[in-house]
Length: 221
Figure: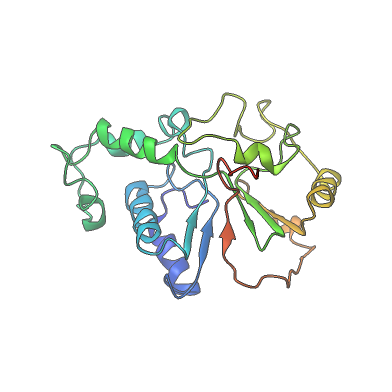
């Protein structure tokens, strides 16, 4: 999760290499909480447009109007007097009569509604933001999700707060075996030091290029 930490994002690129030198798959939660959500999401979208085959963005629970309306992104878009005047933000809002307004927030909301919610790397690594749902029985369910779409009331809740599901290693193992996968890569939570003891290695990545479960796949006749 980046959460508007623009300088941390730049530091990440400095460490791992700027696109297209390195391929990237981000797992969501680009806005809210931090002070530079606009700069963060604009840079990520710019890279996605410039390098569509090297740069990938999944959707997190904060890429949802009902969430980022409360946790800071809405207020950041609405403010008309910002001191930074970042060039990367201004380039995205030239067509707006005011530099920052509610219309800008709605434009980003429409964009977020088009983001995919999962990706699979080399047919072996399942990537998502939050985790596994007991209702997910097959990848076909993900492929059938029409976009653009808003997040349903039952989706993407905070863990251990009564609005989501907590799952353990047994659920992960069953999911991996059922779908012939090797690894689940998720975000949403900070890994505690006590949880870093078990380190997993995966040596099957070839292209390093993820594939999002296809929308509305053509049926074979």
